[in-house]
Image (tube, rainbow, N blue to C red; front, side, top):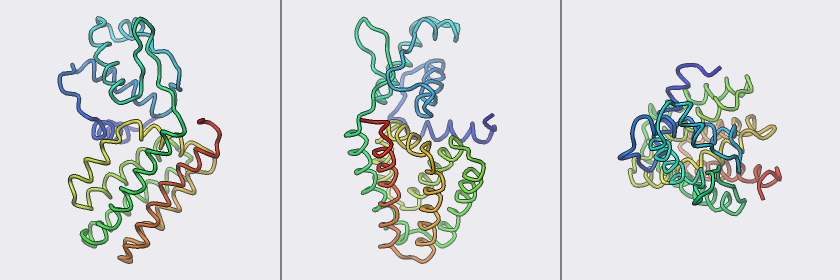
Length: 235
């Protein structure tokens, strides 16, 4: 069971990663959100067919909001909507995962340098609250909770860099990035490795060591990619 606080956080973080939902109805966004979370958290795997008629029945609506929701999912690269065929969850290629992780590693190395340069001691100390949530989730083995709190940690960290364009570039990686991150964290042993990496990063911030913080941040991201690569679950 997901607590109310985590549900609210998940909705907030999901929305913050979107490329825009202008023009979509509230019902379409509700359907989009439910399907997006199921795809990101791995309950709907690559290739899973999305039945439009079933969605329309479940939400007691016409096909129009369903089509809007599917177009939003397609725009986020989570669903493929082929002509005259049933939509399905998009496949994941290791080459795509690697390229996105390489971009993200470089962007977060820059985030870490700017955090050391620009964030106050009080702002850096605020990351400890997120770290405590990660510690509890890792102890409990709660992958989904750890994932969303991890997203929260990284979003808060990015805000401390005080560079709006950098935050926009990170957000532009979209929900597909979330999908890959959740996959990585769901692999055996990953929560404890990720937790240890975050502890090292928080210490580097506290010590005002920009070089170490950037190196740890880059390593943290790429360790996630290597976990996916070695798992054999993506080709």
